Length: 133
Image (cartoon, rainbow, N blue to C red; front, side):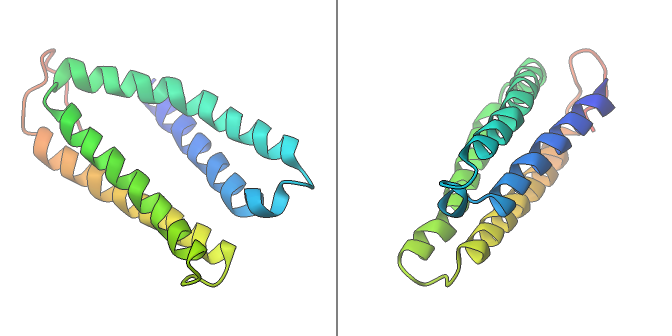
């Protein structure tokens, strides 16, 4: 079950990344808006229940981790928006470069946040005796 959730989450992130790179809203709005909306909704419908399940699991096992996860999530959102803010000011030359820069920053933050959470909370015992990592 854990492997299936991980596979679905990777699929949803991949789908969203493809939408962001192949069909950027600024370029695809007049050509294929239904494809962009459909793929975005599909990735959200896959990722939202998985995210909710993960948050409930973390709350059940390590309720103090939710504050740290909230800080990491806000940091990811700000880092995702930063390249687009720079693009509107003319400091990043192309929309595609901006999107790749934003995806790279989010990916790096997800990786660093995952490593931090695993390192911080893997030593604490889970209530039901399961391994966290």
